[in-house]
Amino acid sequence: MHIHEYQAKQLLKSCGCPVSNGRAVLKADEALGAASALDGPLWVVKAQIHAGGRGKGHFKEAEAGTAGGVRIARSAEEAAALAKQMLGRTLVTRQTGPAGKEVNRIYIEEGSDIAREMYLALLIDRKTSRVSFVCSTEGGMDIEEVAASTPEKILTFTVDPATGLSDFHGRRIAFALGLTGAQIKQCVALIRNLYAAFIGKDMEMLEINPLVVTTAGDLRVLDAKVGFDNNALYRHPDVQALRDETEEDPKELEASKFELNYIALDGEIGCMVNGAGLAMATMDIIKLYGSSPANFLDVGGSADKEQVTEAFKIITSDPNVKGILVNIFGGIMRCDVIAEGILAAVTEVGLKVPLVVRLEGTNVELGKSIIRNSGLNVIPADNLADAAQKIVNAVKG
Ligand code: GDP
Ligand code: MN
Image 1 (spheres, rainbow, N blue to C red):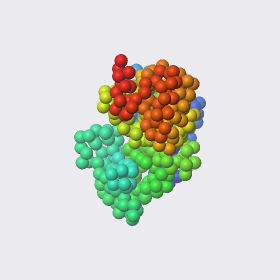
Image 2 (spheres, rainbow, N blue to C red):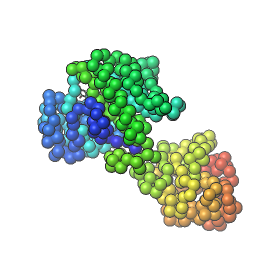
Image 3 (cartoon, protein in one colour):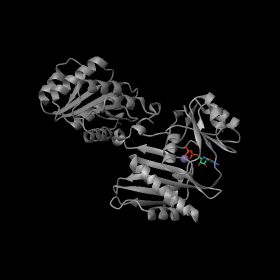
Image 4 (spheres, protein in one colour):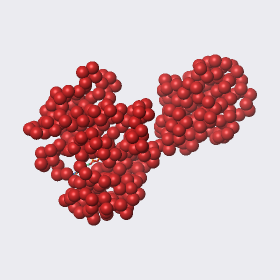
């Protein structure tokens, strides 16, 4: 789960990190009050969407050249006007894709005078099974370019979970960032606070880009992007409360209500599979035979009729889906029960695209005969390769 920049900053501020004063604005008529409550002489007006690259983004309806989702104002009135302009418009950045994202929240912040922009992130490094700090002196809006052309300017420090974090991590990062004097102490404290927040809130990713040195010589967190481990969300009702469902794919949102593990993709074959490994294999083999999956969907080892029906609804609501492949291994579940579930779902939801069903496991023959005798237009398949070829052929005509 991701949260907005202003929520991440509130969280980091409460953990003792140096964050500027700011106010979130949800309605246009709140903008002037919010901006006036903050001190000048600079105000930064920032579109809140769950995507980065806002500074270099552009608004959809805007005339060519109109500046993006991060704007500097020189009075509270100007800040309020910018906030009103952004609200309700669609911001397109390199992370949103061409469709862009509607801006429904604005964050107005007291502006900082920047001497230098740096990059700092914490993430779970799956290769070393450790938390890593990633940092660079070359922070700001072109970090992707830095990573691509001068990767040696990006440094990584991992934390051994057995000994945990200590001040030397903070000092090493401070030197890597070229910090001097009092900034080193500030950096050590910042690293401690960020690490505590990361572990304490079960984050997966915490990115500060830019972390800046102000002209007064102090460290400041100017942008913050946080992702949480969904499997640990139950431990953090305060984090759950920050969820903004309007930022999520409506199909994924619906799936999560039925405990279906669904991720929307941009291919043409809808997949309904049980088990994450089998789902991955199914997506691979669809690719192998020349098409591409419209989604990842793991209905789980014990899906019931309601979940199977819901899965069908979600798959068929995607206009890109030109065919559906059901690939279920009846281990704990029995194939005849699965077949009944599929038929019930198809009867309820209707079917306008070809459907291939491959069943394997307990009571497989019974399951197949239920499908065969149903009178519905379902194409049975004997194995994974057969199933993938049949659905690709059906879709490609
Ligand atoms: P992003 O483009 O979505 O990553 O949005 P950021 O919050 O990182 O802002 C983009 C850029 O705006 C930063 O890299 C800064 O150069 C600039 N910026 C953000 N906040 C301030 C500020 O308080 N003062 C000044 N002068 N520039 C800022
Ligand atoms: Mn940024």
